[in-house]
Picture 1: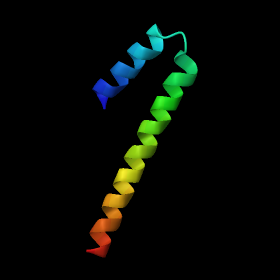
Picture 2: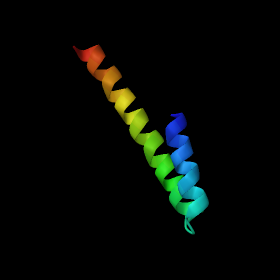
Picture 3: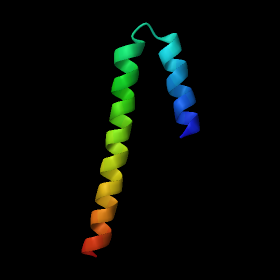
Amino acid sequence: MFVWRKTMNAIGNNSKLNNGFYYFIQAYFYVSLFAFYFSKNNNGRTE
């Protein structure tokens, strides 16, 4: 997670698009992380 944040900060600092791109990537990451956790939980319950 720390490495991810460092990478995102580097991209945000170096990119002219930083605001939109940074927040989009971060949101996408957290949504996919949540979806993975949720589906993992669901599979655990059904099995």
